[in-house]
View 1 (cartoon, rainbow, N blue to C red):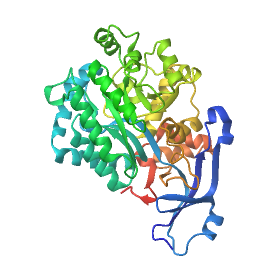
View 2 (cartoon, rainbow, N blue to C red):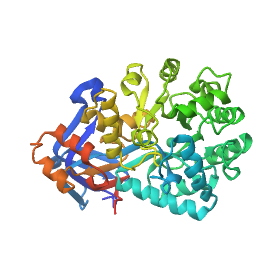
View 3 (cartoon, rainbow, N blue to C red):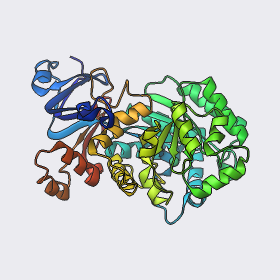
View 4 (cartoon, rainbow, N blue to C red):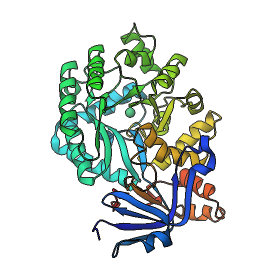
Length: 433
Ligand SMILES: [Zn+2]
């Protein structure tokens, strides 16, 4: 037998498609199911009696009967250097960046600090059931090195990149168009194709990158088509006015990025709240992704994401925490706030669609659905165990759910957080302490 084989038994929930389009047939559910994992991959999934009967001799069985076994959550936009500015009081985007974030990010010049924060950050993601994230580092290459090294030790699938910023920030956080290009390129070449690591070219946003730097980012994207691109777009009114002043020749905010060659199916734009029609059209036409960051949008008073408008226009949408503008690492709590934002827009978001989005939906948005996002043989074994009775209040509420899976999933969305995550498996190994 392989020493790494393991059986995870429980109530299995996984999606094969978007329930918004395909209905509930897109949800795969086994009341007493089991997953056989080996060498980091899912080898088999099915009824527990069948999987157990065919299991390798001596493989341990993790019995989570009664709890839900699901694919790990995926967070499409988060900043690992902001773990100690989360919950900073009283500012909107531009002041928040200058007063808190740009002060904190200067500490990442120190390699020891990078390593310590990267460890904490990944541990926290695992506690919350997030097994893949698309992550901003700081301008310092060592912040990326530390993050990828910690991710590699954990064995987690992570996407990250060095923030490029050459203006409107403290001297210590500025690179130049050329240095941003050179340092990003060196990181890509060093980390490309290594295990479960992917690189994201990361111009922070149009305010802190000159035209020359955005063009350098575009050149990198052409040189390394397998790399992702991540940045921010149309988050805050003052930001949008500033971008219009900085780029008087651009037709709109997204056009600034478009002219630099930064749109495409591997590009993820954080926020996308105040989009003009032309911008919605360009996102859809280029198959770019809009990342919905509800706790951040509420906390910084940025505005309400219009999911229905984007979906109707054919824009690919992802869900994300945006810690530390976002206020919680938990995708469950993020989804709860997302639900409320959509309520204010008079839009519905059934629990099945929410869980699809946090798993296979976000995997599709990141082009990773051939590897993660669902529980199928051959996929990578990133799994979580969820307990809808994790707290006294949840257990009390569950008394009236009466075996209704949708009700249970919605209780998890509205009341769940890291306490509802009983275990997180990364590449088949239990990692929640
Ligand atoms: Zn962000």
